[in-house]
Amino acid sequence: MSESSRRWWALIAIAACVLVVGLDLTVLNLALPTLARDLHASTGDLQWFASAYSLVVAAALLPAGMLGDWFGRKRVLLIALVLFGGASAACAYAGSSGALIAARAFLGLGAAAILPLSLSVLPVFFTAEERPRAIAVIMGATFLGYPVGPLLGGWLLDNFWWGSVFLINVPVVAVAVVAVAALMPESRAGQRLSLDVPGIVLSSAGLTGLTYGLIEAGQNGWGSAVALATMLGGLAVLVAFVAWERRNRDGQPLVELDLFRSAGFTWGSILVTLVTFALFGILFAMPQYFQDVRGLSALGSGLRLLPMICGLVVGMLAGTRLASPRRGAAPAVGAKSLVTAGFAVMAAGLAIGALTKVGSGTGFTAAWITVVGLGLGLAMPTAMNAAIGAISAERSGTGSALLSAMRQVGATIGVAVLGTVLNSAYRSRLDLAGLPGHAAHVVRQSVAGGIAVAHVAGSALLLGSVRIAFVHALDVMLLVCGAIAVAAALIALAFLPRRRRPEAGVAQPARPPSEVSI
Image (cartoon, rainbow, N blue to C red; front, side, top):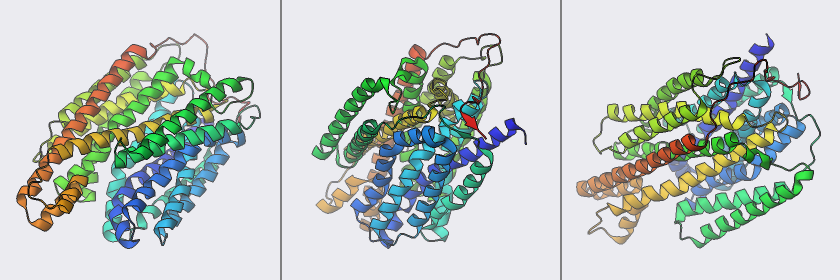
């Protein structure tokens, strides 16, 4: 196998690692009702099944990137994959809520290394001409998990026990371990890095506090004292972390703050975060619309999300072709124009989606979801390339971890803020006249609770009210997501660097010899 082929096959193996993390994020939500029954899990337990994972990812992202630079990105990725596979098996056979929460925490530890290290190899192994295609492969695997997770998870839950949704990770991880071990070259920083212990402690504590506060705000409201205290405490610690990193310039800080001097990294990473934020509307609310309002199964819900992948693939293929530079020549379309166009298309799709009604057909939903996927495919890889292009091969692990941390925080903010928008709009349209206090509380908590109460009461009037209220909330939230996409398009237009023609005769090495060993 030629060296070039080996790099691309290694990339496919890395994409499999990313896919398995994406699958795990989607299948947990499907399994929650079954877990509540079989493990006698309380509402608090159900929340911690997700929160334990998120908090560990937040705490470990930046240190994991540094460990990759220090010990070798291949070595740390293999350890993370083995940990992820083992934790998946532990989740599947957990006999109590406490055991599952602990296993989910270890799962988060593995994911915290897989996420940044899957990006860290891109500046090391691929040239500027190859990188857009490589990023498209990784991003495609990331988003493929969103519709495939409900499809596969729904089928498994219909035919097997709940542990099967975690066991699906194990064979994928096994294949990824073999492929990474055989195909991926080892790479590490050329010089031995020192351990930034204060930076690790401050970043982990700050990101954990901020993430926990956002989770609390999403669950208990923004007026929660615990949510506000932990968010403010986390932000204060992160400010102290930045101050320490600025003072530690003579040593080897955990993150390179000079990355933010690059317009490509700063605005590229912000735009990638905004993509995650805006996309939350589809990935969180649409399954509820399909299953609770339209009465479809988890499998049917996953099938109706597949058009987003079709649009995504078309957008990525077109965007990659237009954005890839030719040797000695600038790309056909610059990052500024392509990302702006992508977000504009996303905004248009989300605006159309905000016209959804209770009786909207599958064709209508498929059309606007496809448009959103098309815009996503145009914008996401190009914005990611703008950010990754500024990261040096020497510190690609820590640079990619910083980018992953920003995306993680953006996703958590999206869950908290847009979840609040959805809940507030839903409750504002409910007609609960004559309903007993406890039943009214259950209806206000979620659309699933409202549908259940309506069926128990045999009230077609309440059922109609709950469905209309949720669709109204969905439309409001999609409008907010569309507004975020418009803001992102304006940011890209104003701040992303213009395309530059490469200097003649200058080629960027894909793999600096001093940093890569095979």
